[in-house]
Length: 148
Image (cartoon, rainbow, N blue to C red; front, side):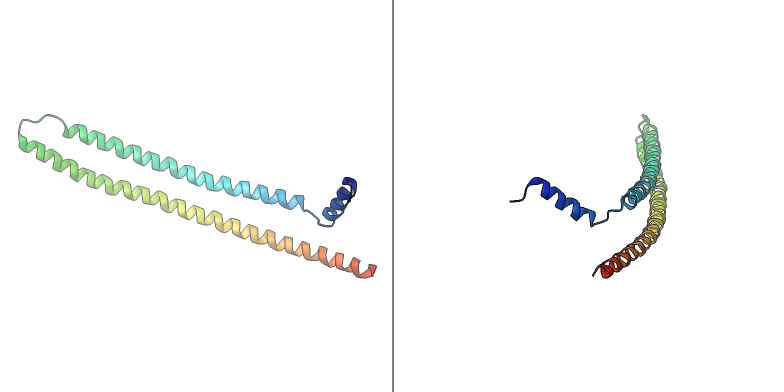
């Protein structure tokens, strides 16, 4: 049975033969953090604008409800107030839905731009890594060939 010292030496030898690119990992982590920051900024901006739209819509609705709830002398005035409220709400709803769709469209466009840029960067980095690995493998192969 092998002792712990022999196992440790064996593991060190094995891990020493598999080069580990700490710089590459660090670079990938930084790129990932930058990508996440950009995407989060897009999401937060959209959430802020959506909240503004919702708040404005609610304020408008409450104001119109307050106008509609005022006591009236003639029962026909209640029907007129309801009709005006419904008409106003239809217009406001169309405006707010359009505003929400504009926010969504902007988020989509910005996200696509960010992802395309990230994809391009990743492709370039992968190409560089493959070239580097190819050179290292070629150099190692030459060393092995000369040892035989």
